Length: 442
Image (cartoon, rainbow, N blue to C red; front, side, top):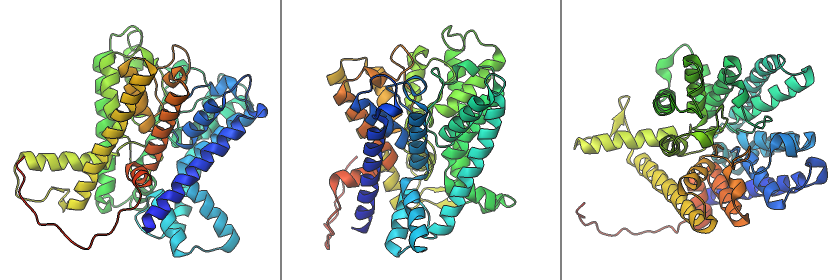
């Protein structure tokens, strides 16, 4: 009951942030030329849910004020609007009651109720990573642009990358920097750190000399992230090596660099250094699995989460071996309720994506694979798209209803399967009885 109240307040908060952001972006001082209201709402939702899908060009169709609004929505969406609410309350009354602490714990997916100290650490880590990223990127951009433009590009892309948002001020994202290792690697590491999750970053720092103290969650995140990065690189290199529209014209060094960049951004952030619409269909299909997996719990990214998939894989291996033991990892037993939760997340996530894909295929009259890719990208809050044969996302070809479906998927991905499901279904009624069990043959 209490959790339902908190989830509902978080959901309403995101709706208000998206709606108000959309209204502000629709003002003439925030954009150039025509901008429909659905497109301004879509842009606000994409920014607040740190997705990056765009139906209007960030670099060409918004003014400096519009870009600043988008950047503010990205930052609020990345660290959680509840964090900002709590900071406001702290300035007013200097303390939080237990309900406010529980709401923040749920919003930021924190492990305990020590929310104030944890919030301070989160804000410090956000500022530190974004500042370092902005400095490195600005210095590198200064080789091509003047000082003020370089500084603005550095700040914008550092915040966008750490929050796994994927918004870029360049019309072709980072396709113009295919051979720039400093920019691509800096963006990649900002995305990785943002995707690991706040309490993983804090735990790594606090136990930097004693890695044996890492919790199972942190170990799974580090190992899972490394495996997915390498697997993604192998996937892209093997499929796209000779593709004349993607990796074909690049040198071996550039192929490795760009496969590294794509492998990271395909899971969480949505930046690209090649034309995604030119990828082979096999690359697009298998990429949906990476986008569905996403990054870490309590991070700036979406998806089912690495730990969820890891737990289910371990459980399946135990079942296939017909082991009489409870599944375990790193010499620790996995609780049955955690396994049940992981299974529910994967089933519900798959259902949401397939159902939304079915609706769009029947209403938009567009290619199935491209729609599946777009829906998965929205739900995973990734932001990659096969495009509209130009610089915008594939969603730009959808009608108002189709764009609304994508907005719902972005919100569902940011809120999480359980949170979104709780909003849709409401709180469960408490039962004080239990039915008898009976064996079912499977």
